[in-house]
Length: 210
Image (cartoon, rainbow, N blue to C red; front, side, top):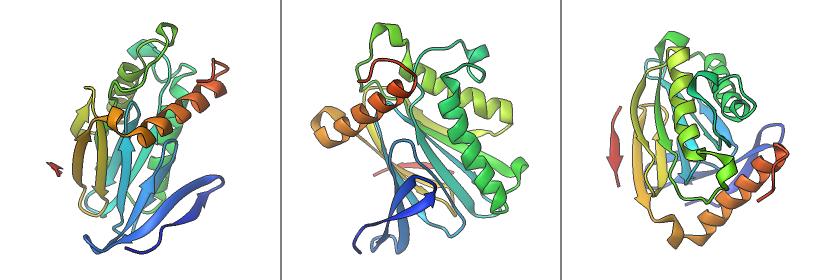
C-alpha cells in the first residue's frame, strides 16, 4: 500500500488518497464533512457513527460519489429541507449531485444508497432526535429529488465502515462497536462539537458484509 497523502479538492475540502493493492484501485478516504465525486472508478471509503453517508451514482455512466455529514437537531419531516438544521445535509447533497452532473451524469439516471445514523453519540435532550433527523433528511431529500434509494443500512447502535465502488455502485459494509474504537469515537465527537458550535449551540447494487 502506498503512502497516504492529502489532496485539495475544493477550497478547504481535503481527502486522503492511496492505492489499494487488494482491489487494484485508487481509494479515497472521506472524513466527516467531506464529499467526493469520481469519474475514474475510484473506491470511496468512510467510517460512520451518528453521521450519514449517501452514495449517489449513475450506473450507465459509471460515475459515483459520496458525502459524509451530520445533521444536528430535530425538525418535522415536512420542514426538513427549509429549516436551519437542514442546511448541512442539503449542502452536502447539492455539492455531490452538482459535481456528478458536471462529470456527465444524467439526473434522471441517478440512484442512491444510504448508510449510518447509528445511536453512538450522546446528545442533550434539547438537541432533539439527531440520528432520526439524519435518516429522515436523507430519505426526504432523495424522495423530493426523484432519486430512488436502492438500498440502505441505517440506525441501530453500531458504527459502519463503508467501501463504495463508484464504477459499479457496489458497497462493502462492516459494522463495528464504536465504543471499542476510541479514535473513531473521538473524531465523531470533534465533528459534532464543530457543527453545533457553528449553529451557535454549545460546543461539545448490493450491499455485502465483509
